[in-house]
Image (cartoon, rainbow, N blue to C red; front, side, top):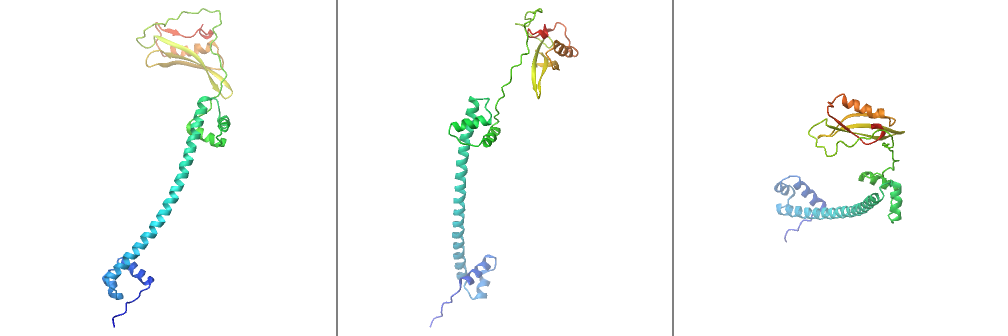
Length: 233
């Protein structure tokens, strides 16, 4: 009678394969366990095939989960991009709208979004509703003082300190306004040569700015150009 074929448990096969995969020589494993090298190699191939299939299945499921999350993110980003575009359009059409009025306008256009979200998006887009300021007049040309003709019209400049241009503007502060009188040298590069700051539109403000400029500049044959306001008359 021929030799009976030995039966090996799955646990035994996996132990032999694990030892082979860990670096033990297959010939020595075969002698120790009365196994042929070919049989051990076959077990090893079968084991690796099963592991590969198991890992592939796990990777596919993982990939499917990642794709699902990615699709959700794309949908969310698409919606956010749409809302941002609407915010930009509304802001261009209504530059004085703040985030609450923009939120209300979005809702009128059937785009439902929280006002906090709108505020966050506006900050990200660098959009800020403009504040309507009360106009502050800085020029009072209704006076009886002498009005001089325009001496700089068509004048060709060849150097610095030939023409200075004077003007007054206001600066908004926390509890009101202050006034800035400045004198600009009209030649490249243009540069402020004198200035003064005050709480009122007094002629002294314009004189203080002029005195500051005269202290550091030559004024021979200089033209001091300004508007026809009473501060310069």
